[in-house]
Length: 285
Ligand code: SF4
Image 1 (tube, protein in one colour):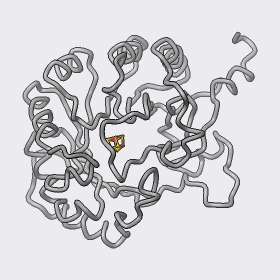
Image 2 (cartoon, rainbow, N blue to C red; image 1 turned 180 degrees about the horizontal axis):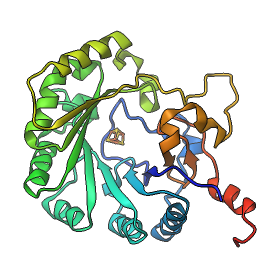
Image 3 (cartoon, rainbow, N blue to C red; image 1 turned 90 degrees about the vertical axis):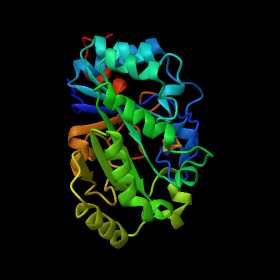
Image 4 (cartoon, protein in one colour; image 1 turned 30 degrees about the horizontal axis):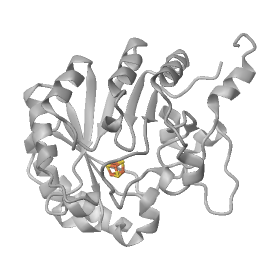
């Protein structure tokens, strides 16, 4: 029986109330292949999550798009918890109400959000929003004693704010602050002027590592370009062999909006893993 990696990122929707010019969603690159006409419903995700748990998955990170736009989100979270999966919910934070925060804590759903800007927040998110609702949600989660990881993607418009962003996230109460360069994927493929070069990222990372000690953990990405990307003109290597070349692919995989499998967040090729499993296992119907 083919196993899956212990950790899966699950993309529940391509819809989002933000329009970040750095958005990593692969459906921005291949809309006809990766943005299906409809989202899978609770029953379909429930079946997939049972199969994932049977095939070695221990934790799932629900993401999107913005997963809080799904009205059936709580039911999907409950399906995952019911089969014993550890659950993290990635959200842009704009829809995190007090009621939602308390409900996630009650369901034992850990949280992760992003803080892509302070003065640059509107530019970075393609909205006229301010960062304050997200900072307040981080603070409230800390008051509820419920962990929230905060990701900070760096690009040219927010680079000068890097240390302030880390400090703001940490002082608001983030349990972990993760900083990394916005990568060459999704919408960023059409927005290369925003991309940091490797030297800019190393300089920013060095500056973050000498700032005054903060009580929270600050983690800087080691990754600048993902090797899961098939270079233009080359034939994609089929999964699972393709995962052999990517360190993340050993421990981590992605289910896209249609339930198909990718070897990591940055890979574009999707695989129908459930059909492949069924044809290998004659005891299944
Ligand atoms: S990066 Fe996240 S918040 Fe921004 S548009 Fe993409 S899915 Fe939405």
